[in-house]
Length: 240
Image (cartoon, rainbow, N blue to C red; front, side, top):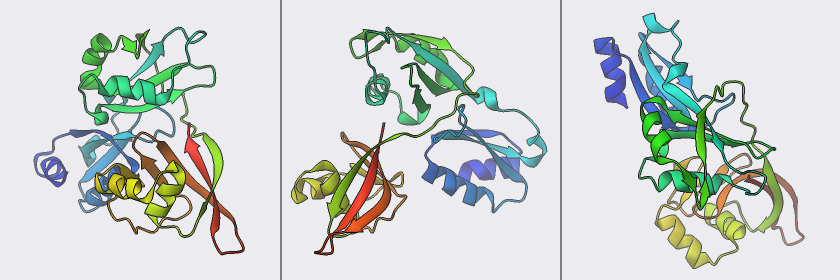
């Protein structure tokens, strides 16, 4: 990433990343802030997008519009007969052999319509290759998505934990054994705030996001209370 920024700084070239997680965006912004003649524009397609592309530019280009770097699609399917979910859509896209960073946010509305953001340079391939989600036929229609807002919704539940350590939280969320949790963390299947975390004793806090491969994504919403034995009752939200 530093090489890209140096190319912009020294050669006055525009450089574009793929879609970045919030954690990666934070790192890029910190690096860009060290250069007086380099700026970054963030393009995610949707309002309040989580995943965004970094458009690294010399300052003299800061009045240009780079929204073209993200293409929006509506996924057309028989939504009255089929209930497609985010993991199915993302899993099918990943099975095409493309990187996760090529796809931005996937937005599923209350009426079951699905929209997705794609890197502009990969749009022709996605249009040709993505014809099914699971066993269900679909079609992609280009759409302006800049007026669609990504709003995170949660299925709320309570967990009871002895501490806010990462391994303890993951155990409670998955209802699996300590050994399973330990192996999952060791294999890099757990992300803490969008970063793979392999420190079992990492302390978690309210507001943190925990992603568990094959189990989904959870946000720690609040500590509701404590039991008589001192264990914490934590309200978590599973992202849906």
